[in-house]
Length: 192
Image 1 (cartoon, helix red, strand yellow):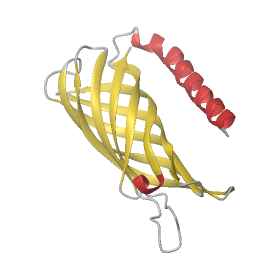
Image 2 (image 1 turned 180 degrees about the horizontal axis):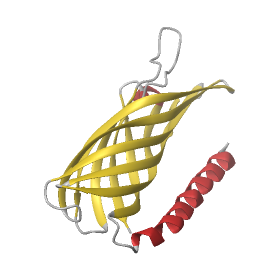
Image 3 (image 1 turned 90 degrees about the vertical axis):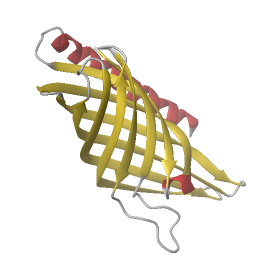
Image 4 (image 1 turned 135 degrees about the vertical axis):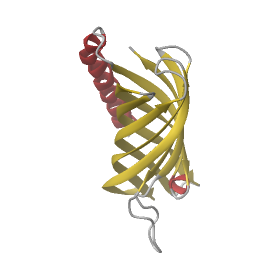
């Protein structure tokens, strides 16, 4: 089990580094396109908090300046929520792959200062539950919305807070968890 998690984490990390290496040369031109990535702490809320705990997230994004203080950003993220255990009988965990498009309003400039954003996109949410050694996994491709704000300290470094709502199935009587996830994340981001 731990080996599978480490393998998945390595694959995601290597894919993230490869994506940045491919897109970094595009930043050398003054086209208004910028690429970057982020590292997040993800906190489950609502029903997701019933089956998982605080976790981590990785993201890669491309951002295009639209002028007049606005930008458009495409985001690819992976959020992994830590395993939650009830005594020794029941264990559960969750993760999500996220593809979002965000409209950003910069209060100062695109390079520095405060900004707010809202977006929509698609998520692939997975919940895994183990009871007395028997496991079951639920996975669903769903629509989601996100919103938040951040602060760019420089052209290359910033922080942001994101609320994400995924409109999946909610748990019902007899089910342990659904795939309708809500979470808040705090991210440290960098742009090339």
